[in-house]
Image (cartoon, rainbow, N blue to C red; front, side, top):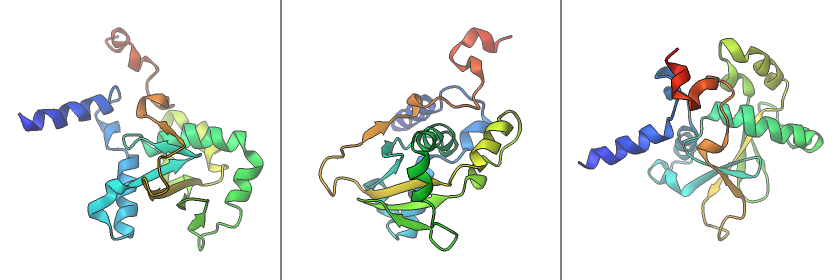
Length: 170
């Protein structure tokens, strides 16, 4: 039936991971939140979101984007990233970065998690807040940035055995 296709799509995007981990906020949730703020909720799909100059796949978990993509970007651009958010206190939630507006997210809200990643969280807490740029897709012509698909970012909190079904039975 027609509802089967939606179910298939959902199961492929949430490969691995336990049942509880699937209600983590994703890029699509953030896009909807931004669209609501802009009073264009019904056309949220017109927005594309970028972190570290890469277009984000809507199925990516925000936590993974921050722990992998943003962390790597800050490490590679230590001086420019700190200046990028230097003047961004609570009163400056948006900054201009070329084409599109950017919002700054404090890392504490995304990384307030339990357990194994505690060291990573302490490291991330010292990082500048993640900057997410949003823009209308296709306004300046075809996008020149790389796209980041959900399967390209390794979830640091995923069980190491998620790719090997035999290991899960132990």
